Amino acid sequence: MSGLPGTTGLHARAELGDNVTIQGYAALIAGDMKRQVIVADGTRRYSLGEPAVRGSETVYVRTGLEDRELIRFIDYTLDEVLGVVNLVRPLWAFNSDMEEVRLVVDYAPDGASRDQVAGGVGVRYQRDTLTFEVGAAHHAHLRLGVGLAWTADRLGIDLRYGLAFEDDPSLSGRASIRYAATDAGRVELLHTTGAPGNVNSTTVSYSHRFGSADSGTQVTASVGVRYAWEARNIYGRANAELAAGSFTVGLGHDQAFGSEARSTSTASVAYRINPNLSARAAFELVWGNSFSGVLGLEQRVGNSVLELSYQLPTASGGGNLARFGVRTPFQLSDNLYMDLHGGITRQLAGGDTDLAVGAALRYSGDNLRATLGTEVAHGSSGFKVVLRAGAAGQLSADQTIAFDANYQVVPRSRVASPLPTH
View 1 (cartoon, rainbow, N blue to C red):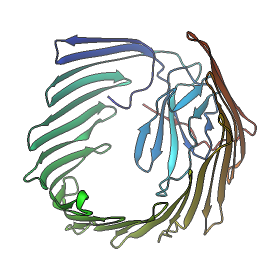
View 2: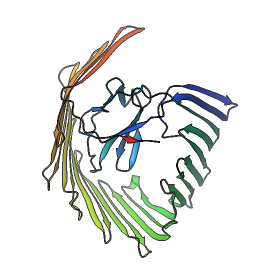
View 3: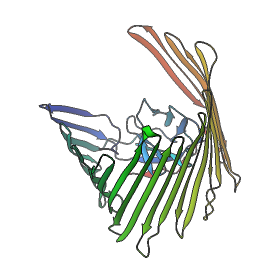
View 4: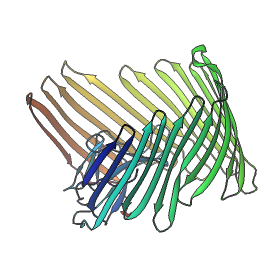
C-alpha cells in the first residue's frame, strides 16, 4: 500500500509454494504527525524548522496534482537533529511545463511519543499472467487495498482500489478491461473513483493506430464516451496524434452535453528543429471559462542543456511567467569535473524574480570520490546560501570511509505553515 509513513519495526515474509507470498509488519509509531509544504527554490537543502523523529518521515515531490514519493538515501537524506532535508538534485519551483513543484514532508516532531500501534498484512498470488493482491494496514485509521492484473492473448484486466476509513470512508482507484480487436485497434472500458468525494466516472473508448513508427509516419486516433456519475453529465471524447519524423502534433476535445458542464479542447505540438534544438507548445481551452498555454525551447550544446519556457497570460491574471534553466558539466582533467546549473523565473506582469545558481567540483579516482559545492538562491523570500561537501574512500577491500556535510550560511527557507495529518 502507498501513502504509509516510514517507520522502524518488525517485518516478516513467508512464501507458500511457488505462487503465494505473505508479508506483515508491526511497529510503535508517533501519532502526532505534521506536514510541511515547501516551495522549491532551486537548491538541494530545505528546513523543516524543528527536529524530527528518525524514520518517521515520508517525502514527496508534488508536481501539479501528482505526488512522487522519494526514497531515503537514494533521493534524499534527513538530518533529524536539525530538521533538514537534503536532496540529491536541485529542486525548482516550476518544471519545464510550468507546473508548480512543491516538496511535501510528513514527519513526527522530536519529542513525539510512540503512542500508536501500526501494522499491516498483505497476500500476493502470482501465476503466469495473473497477479492478485490484497492487504490491510492500520496507522491512525484502517486502510484496505486490492489489486488484480491479468492478460490473455487479446484481453487485459487491471484493478487497483483502496479504501480508507477516516472521518468518512474514502474509496479511490481504477478498474479497466481492454480488448485488442485488431493488431492496431483496442476497445477499453475504464472506471475511476477519486478521493476525496468518491467521485466516479466511467469511460468507453476505442483507439486505432494507423501506420507504424518504422514507416516514419504514425497516426493514433481515439473516440469515446465518459459518464460522470455524481454530476450526471455525459462527455464525448475525441483525440488524435500525428507523429511524422521530427514533428508531433496532438489534438483533443471533451464535449460536455450537460447544461452546467464545460467542454475542454487541448492542442500540443513538438518539433525537433535539428538534433540539438527542439520546440514545443501546449494549449488548453475550457470553453466559456479559461485559456492557458505553455511554449518551450530546449537547446543542447555539447553536454550542456538550456531550457526556456513561457506560460501565456490567463484571464484570471495568472500566467505570464518565464523560466530559463541551464545545466552544464565540464571535465577539467582525467579525474576532476565541474558541474554548473542555474535557473531564473520571472513574473513578467508583477516583476517578481527568483534566481538560483550552483557549482560543484567532483573528484573521481580509483579509491576516492569527493565533492565540494555551493548553491545560492535569491527571490521574493530572501537570500539563501548553502555549502556542501562530501567524500568516500575505500581503505581496503573490506573497509570504506565516507562523510557528508551541508551548511546553510543564510538559513531562510520558504516553508508554508505546518498542516496536521491524520
